[in-house]
Image 1 (cartoon, rainbow, N blue to C red):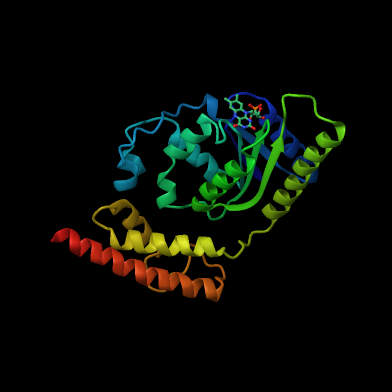
Image 2: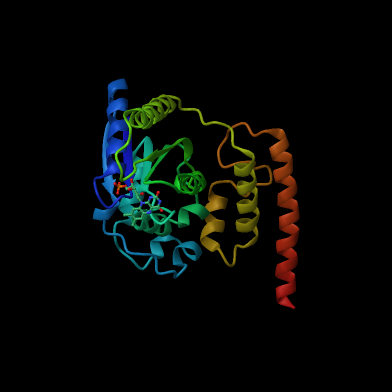
Amino acid sequence: MKILVVMGSPRKGNTYRAVRKIEEVMRSMGDVEFEYLMLKDVNLSHCCGCFSCFEKGEEYCPFKDDAYLIEQKMHDADGVIFATPVYGMGVSAQMKTFIDRLSYIFHRPRFFDKKALLLSTAGAGGLKDVLDHMQVVAGMWGFEVVQKVGIIAPPIPQSKRKKLAEEQKLRKAAVIFYDSLLKKRRRSPSFREVIVFRVQKTSYGELAETLPADHAYWKEHGWLRTQAKYYVDVPVNPLYNAVGWTVEQILRRKIRKDKADAQK
Ligand SMILES: Cc1cc2nc3c(=O)[nH]c(=O)nc-3n(C[C@H](O)[C@H](O)[C@H](O)COP(=O)(O)O)c2cc1C
């Protein structure tokens, strides 16, 4: 199996070492290939906020840099490890630029056959916020997020017991991630995921003039069909589906009313 590591740290420090530990465990379990994509080394400009990718398509991005190549590397992998240190209670600048530049994927998700492991390291705090944020990002891009692992790597010496406990976390995450990659079936979506699907379906279905690229993509994938419940064919909890359907009806009515009001 092929694992791509999207490394948000600007150095080979705590975050890199934590991923290497995961690699070591996974390699001991079977035939695993690791590729490290060090975001500090790629040619990726900051997003300039032109909205071209959202409105017209990613091919209209004014920057001709490594964004396409990076997306392709994720397509070529079976699983992706997104790793970042906590910087200023958020992700690193490198990770943020990566997320911003590939933000069209929030609108046009595509990684439904991929699993993700999220890893962050911090000196003291911010791990939960960073990992929760990364979970929303990877989830909305289509990844099945299998594990989130947060490691405290303080600047002061750590007791042996604490070090061992952190190592144990990495070991456990590696085993769960490896096992998940052997299973091809995707889990059923959460309530939140079902609602996100319905909100996107209604918005992109109704806003063909403002978001033509999104509308075309959703249509092409069959996600605008009345009976479409989710991006992929997996069982959807009937209660979540019923609430999702209701949200869709209410939102559709609201968008149509707003559009009519704007014409007045
Ligand atoms: C610019 C900067 C900002 C940081 N901000 C935080 C922070 O908000 N919370 C925290 O607990 N640690 C913070 N840290 C510490 C790092 O998250 C921690 O040392 C991390 O393990 C570094 O990972 P690395 O060795 O892969 O670079 C910061 C470090 C730097 C350099």
